[in-house]
Image (cartoon, rainbow, N blue to C red; front, side, top):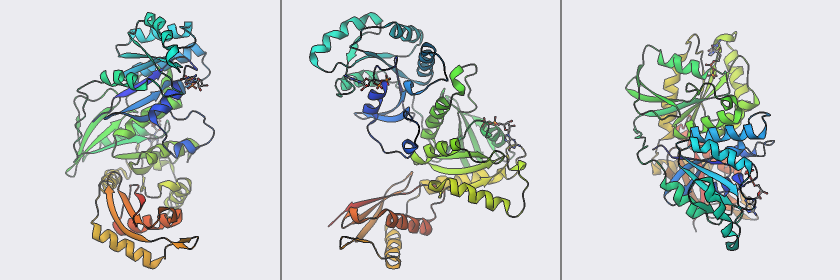
Length: 436
Ligand code: GDP
Ligand code: GDP
């Protein structure tokens, strides 16, 4: 099912990122550990009662050195283009400013539902501040306090009430959904086109494609695939389109709907910092991953080239050690035929369930081979392991004390499970739990 998307807009300092963080809650993410970016997180999943939705903090999308008003205009445009419902945030301590009115003007023109949040209403006495905001023309203003977490429930009830009812994506479990991510010019569009023009695939357009992406159906060797192509759907002429944060936003939206994500790298230019960041998003989302080295036609190859390139990729993307690497050329179509089988394999492993008895035999063998660690005279005891999830596969390992499960030992068990069941292309997760 396609999740509804909510965007928060408003001038700087009204509290957009504070509200964003509140609604998203704290989630540990390897992406956030990448230093140097204070406001990296602009897109995340949030929940209200039984509804999950995607949330965008447009304040985190800076557009070059544009003046403030121009920035705000672009941010509002992004919200209008990307969101189903917009939260327009103002500062309840400062009254309506000229900048608020500028944002309001843009929002009037959109046909999207707007919910007006009046922030920094930290105590009940301040509630009377909100009446002047009726004059903005968005109906009832909702008093909230991002820093104290007040009023958010009422605001969210209103937001969720505006979600489109029938935007369901009936995802066929038999069909493999995949998307392509990578920095500009690695060849995403070229690769999509190459796949669509391949002789052995049957292509059909999908009706009711979402406005975010072009979904195209492929059929090959009795398997249905859907390519979620955001790169091909360029909103020509929009200034913000070339900014990095915006392309990250589009990539995250595509990743969310995918079973398998192709991380494209460019053999010609080699690996760049931005590649690692983009790959981190896919890993973080727990999707199956295939690394694609495109433009392989530009490399003079001998018997060692591929191995050397692979070693280089492995060194740069250690956390993606499970992802298979496919070398190809979108331009000449060389080795292109190896891609769909790799996607299929990764997807099957992503959804794979293993038998509990075999799983426990594997763990027993592992324990016998490498004794469990001790800490302060206590030895880790592994009692029982069971698979609790798929997409990606997750395993609960019942132990005497989860504190005793050292990171390196957990890694060792993970590798043993991988070796035994061949989870190529998918991350797997181990959750140590206490059982006496
Ligand atoms: P943004 O620029 O719109 O994303 O605003 P921020 O979330 O960065 O917040 C700007 C400032 O307002 C920060 O110093 C926040 O701590 C503060 N702030 C945010 N929400 C509240 C609130 O509900 N009450 C008060 N008193 N301060 C807030
Ligand atoms: P995107 O921005 O990731 O969608 O990249 P494009 O598909 O627009 O490709 C960027 C450039 O790389 C274009 O000039 C393509 O012709 C070129 N390109 C794409 N794939 C290949 C390839 O396999 N080999 C070579 N030599 N060039 C390629």
